[in-house]
Length: 477
Image 1: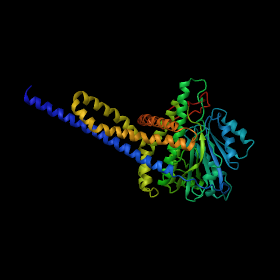
Image 2 (image 1 turned 135 degrees about the vertical axis):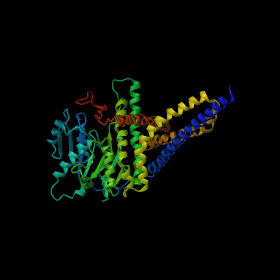
Image 3 (image 1 turned 90 degrees about the vertical axis):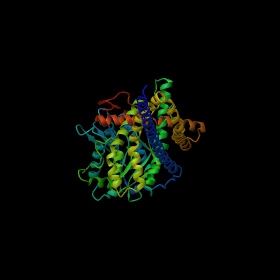
Image 4 (image 1 turned 90 degrees about the horizontal axis):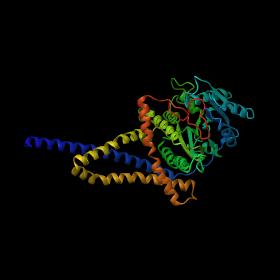
């Protein structure tokens, strides 16, 4: 081979090796930044979780309570929910929004209202119905607002949102109006904790085999760990940073806070965002941007059913991830807002970018593997040297990302099941680690849906619903 050709090949070879190394190093740096960002957030959540102190109960009689229950084909759960809410809040008005149900939801609510004059039906019909939870909540807001007696102190009126399968803990109202929550006049909204009431169900899938039930039990348990440990720590961190997020179940909003949002141009009678996939979280952003304080109360919780179907679970979480991506449009307003402290802005950006980070890792991880595989074939010596140099750092980052998940398993055991063994806590921690990988799946699916312009969704079917009624349930549309 001529010397000139040999030299050219060597130069090209060195260039390819250099480029491959540069790309691999960039991927390593990006992953290190992602892991570091995660560890910092986890450390803050853990500290807030471990040092949380309970508040003293307030006096619910100082407020007027209106609990709103959005319903769409909820005959399986609505009667039980109304009975449970009446037991917890005997003086509250219960507003059921029937979003043009095709089952017996309306009849069951009217039957309950016949025996209880504080149960009200908000009837919606297509084409104005079935266009999103935000629109349904706005319909209830308008009826509640219009029905208040003249002279009512609207700052003492509280609108609570409870899912159709939600059950409030006894003493919830006392905690929601304590001196740290709505007992403070600057507090616009309160979010309480969430737990899964079917976490102890030994056979979540009656009639199915052992393997299917084992998977369903693990899925239910992980949802309970997620809300009672991971999410609780996250919300307690947000309470410190001033960026508490509102959820679709168990949020309580001062009526004057909702009124302040309707004063904005184009939002008359519509405090909740309509046609938003995360109308609950977005409403919290709107309230904070309007200057209201939001807080989280851990001393009370709302229970709901955890999903037992992997398919329905992934569909629900894909919607959440896609709704999270939609919130990126708030970035500029949050960064410019005087109502968010720097720590709050950093926390909000972390939340906004979480699905985006997951999508990039989904794309970059196969790329990194492909570069390494190609390097081992074409330039084995150089690739092996690179891996020996940086491989241990990758392994260390992987371990560091795993250990925090184990903590939540132990924290959940200590908080919820102190009677269980430490080995059980360790097992739950390992499952939390494996469970966390669903975030990459749903983020990727959400990104694809955004690229395709698909923003429609059907409701998530309850476990008790054996047959889907009307429009498809638990399916993307």
